[in-house]
Every structure is written in structure tokens, then in C-alpha cells.
Length: 213
Image (cartoon, rainbow, N blue to C red; front, side, top):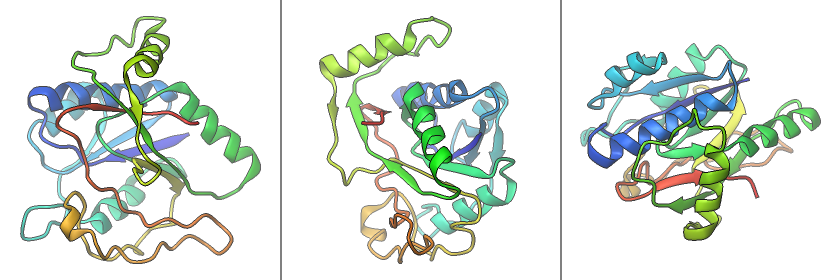
């Protein structure tokens, strides 16, 4: 299955709620899904211990304290126990059609790069993942009150281990003004090409829902 990896914002206030919701949703995707949180942000270590997921505390940063994508990607690929990874923003809730899309592509391609945009909707309370209809309830809520972002809003990348290993230049993630030179994507010839740029990382106001369309 997949190894999810993300670099969170501090787990405080509303960010604590939406990031916990996101991580829990990734764990619902598959019983063997692996989750890595990268960075020393406040609360990250405690959440990793609580959820039983791996914490990679140390990551290279620029002078502003912003994490470098190269450090995030390389460390994730070094420790991931699955051959396929997903870099995802830490406030993205995934639904079951995400898994269906990955499995469908896996049947057609040996190697691929999958990326997707999100739906925005307000989620200000912890989601009850034990409820049998939690996904249906959330999906209805999205269609009733949410809206889908334009195609340039890319919030996750699914790729094969090694595709980006030691191939991403130094610019940091999370600050638009510092992400203008991320370099070219190193996808193999013939595969979809996309700059591995996730910006902005996180959202203080709304939870993000990734849904395949």
C-alpha cells in the first residue's frame, strides 16, 4: 500500500483539529497504510505517539525556519516501508475514492505520478471515524457547502519510491516567495511531469478534502 508523509503546522487551536482529522483519514485508507510526520512543530511528537505513527523530527531548514522539500522527500523515501509514497498537505482529509484511484492506476502502470486538487469546506470539529456513515455524511457536507479549488491547487502527489530521491533542489516549502525556483520535475520520460511544489502548506481557516473527479 502507501506511505503517507507530511510536514504539519503546530497542533494548536483549529489546526490541531483539522490536522488530526486528516491523519486519521489517511489511516482509514488501508489497514497497512504508513504515516510519517516530518518536522519538530509543536505537538507533532505527541500526536505521532498517540496515533502510533512515525515521527522524523530533524529536517533541514532555511534561515526563516521553513523546511526544505529536498530534506522532506529524501528522508521519507529513506525510511518508507512501502514502495509507493504520497506527499500530502497535513490538513487534507482523504475519502475512499482516493484508494480506488491509486489501485486503478496501479493496474495499468508499473510506475506513475498521481496528483490532485482539493475541495474546501468548513470542518471545525473532530470527525467520528467510527461512525459507519462518516464518509457519506462528509461527502454530502462537501457538496452542500464546499467548493473545489482550481486545477493549480495541487495538494498531494503519489509516486514511486526513488522517483524524487536526491533529485529535488534546495528551495523550501510553504512560503510562496521562496518557492519560485523549485527546478524541473524528474519524472521519467513518457510519464506525467509536475514540479513537486506544495504551496501553501496548511490552511488556518478551512479543512481540505481531496476527492478524485
